[in-house]
Image (cartoon, rainbow over all chains, first blue to last red; front, side, top):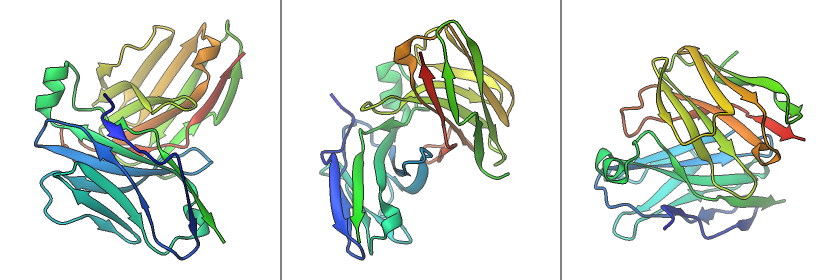
Length: 123
Length: 115
């Protein structure tokens, strides 16, 4: 089963409008971290925002906010006032706590990424 | 230079060649990572180094050989690659990989094509 699911392969938004990019995750851990990255066509992965599983407030960072709904295991990224420069691939990623990592035989160093959503901002 | 840099940005090599990818981080971080990004597949972690010591090898074939001489530099030595190894190779660094909220910062990547 996928640990990170991004159901929107592509999204379109008009400049200056808000857009929500969906992300759902799967973990049995109580302690985990959720990240969003942006990847323009140049290739670099740019960190946008982080949400810890125990954070009571939704994370915000400038025009980016994370709509964290723990019971639904969703961590949607909201971009307000879209700009042309926001056109890029957006990846949701999760880092699990030690418990899940040990049970799966892995480590908790790994960021598990979704397949991404390609956002196009139209003028 | 700031952030994480990678050279070369583009590399074309034959299956019998030997080449190396270089990554350098200017952030004072302690951990460095190699990721592989193939078309239409999620990012795959390859190797992790913490304080120059390798802490993870994610079942990577031996034709990929990492080297971390210090906490600021990371290399990926390539030999006898296959066409399916063509991908974007991303390097990342982070401050403290034991911290769940530890953020990884990525370089621009090396676009590798194996002929």
